[in-house]
Image (cartoon, rainbow, N blue to C red):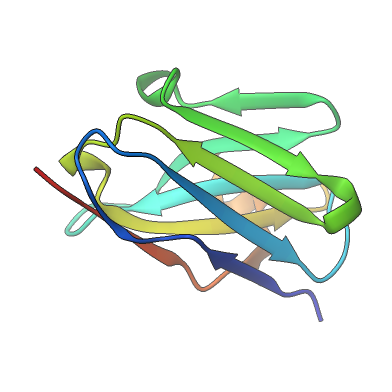
Amino acid sequence: QVQLVESGGDSVQAGGSLRLSCVASEFLWCMAWFRQAPGKEREGVAYIYDDQSFHADSLMGRFTISRDNAKNTVYLQIDTLKPEDTAVYYCAASREFCSVVENHFQYWGQGTQVTVSS
C-alpha cells in the first residue's frame, strides 16, 4: 500500500521560509503539492515528473518543487511566506497523469499545517 508522509509544516512569521517534505513508500512518477486554506477549496500548488516541473502562476517565484528520487521524496520550498499562505499542504502522487487536477491523483498524504502570522 502506497503511503505518503508529509512533514515540515510550522507556524512562522510573514517573510519567513519553510521547506515541506513528502516521503513516499515507493517511487511514484508524478508528485504534487496541493493546499487547502480555511474555508476554501483545495488548490494545486505545483507538480513534478521526470525533469519537468510546474508551479501555479500566482505562486511562481515563491514556491519551488523539487524531488530526490533516491529518497522517494518531494520537497516544496516556500519563500517570503504571506498570511494568505496559511493552509494545510497535501502531497499527492499519480502513476498516470500529472497536473493540478485532483482527480488525477491516486495517493494522498495526511497533510501538514502551515500557519503564517503577520
